[in-house]
Image (cartoon, rainbow, N blue to C red; front, side, top):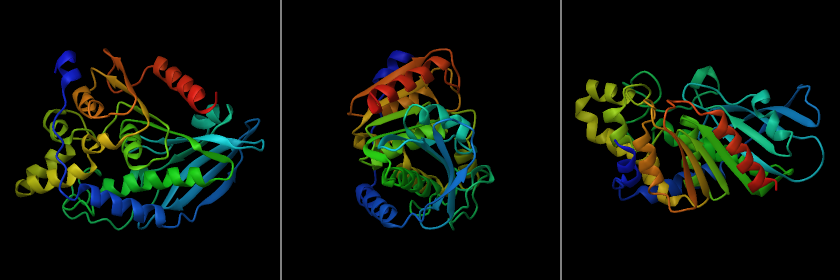
Length: 311
């Protein structure tokens, strides 16, 4: 799709009638459930920074892992929650120390089951395709990303609850799947004041599964090929977790990166979500990058975090 056409591309929402009720009930349960958080000191020889391994309860089951870094000195600091890419793991201490060294509290979260990290909950998965895209896909209540989105909100709640964190100065970020999670949390939580999703996944499913040559989106056509009678049911389930349908709920400033040669998270699908965001927003376009983000954009994100959270 040509760039000028993408700038105008705004496919219709396809929310089910109970979309808002579904998410209100899910979020109420996710926030109410105790976190049972545990911070385990981790020896990192970084001056002025304290580092911890984190454990907390996942939504409706499972035990999640992550990392937490904070300034060593006393005070109340802004917070940043970082989400990771598909089949990866949460950012580790050396990935986060540059932010903690600048006076920010930083939390990362492992997505349940991915890369053999945090334990998975008992999510229905009969007949799923390889990977996680079709786990529990027969129903929105059992779908894997309902749990991941809820876990991601709970991670932000954990960060906000820390006594050294100023809950009025929170940002979220991540790339690929992590960018999709940042978009979803921007819509599902009122806490972030800044969202920095990079090359986000989990966008405009209907188009993504029909045009994307490289994984993970093709897991879904693979499932539908095996179970063609479930196609409409699959699309219905995906609609609850499509950032296209969540985008109008985003209220915080949102800065998105989009790479025009990306064959994993097609740029048109990202524009589809972006064009439904009504909050303050900007898109940084990289015409010749694939599924990677240039150094210049990471520097831009760092400047935005410093200017917004720690002026």
